[in-house]
Length: 154
Image 1 (cartoon, rainbow, N blue to C red):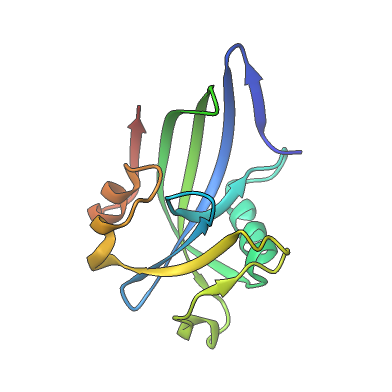
Image 2: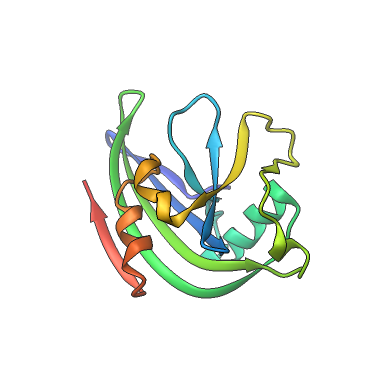
């Protein structure tokens, strides 16, 4: 069961995401129905720590095993979507693929769960300012290169 809780007029989400960077390119996913990208990740399940969450999510979405390299950031994100207020707590970890061949991948990847609306692509970090990535404060986190960092975005 996901750690998503309705509290008064808010929805509280606890999420985890991976920052996978190869050859100065960041792996992101994009729902083809939206105009923005996100880091790969998902909701934490009850009783699951955030490192296990991101390992599970990457395995479920891409069929790839990862190693957690370091803790990067916690972002408290407040936003509205579909007339609903959200309070999201996002834990971000730097990660890399375990398999040496996977570390060489630079082409777009496919979702193995059958979610054809999710596309995975590599964004050149030198082009990050030209890409809409949410939460927008994430760009500051990536560019800071000084971890760990805690950000609150309203």
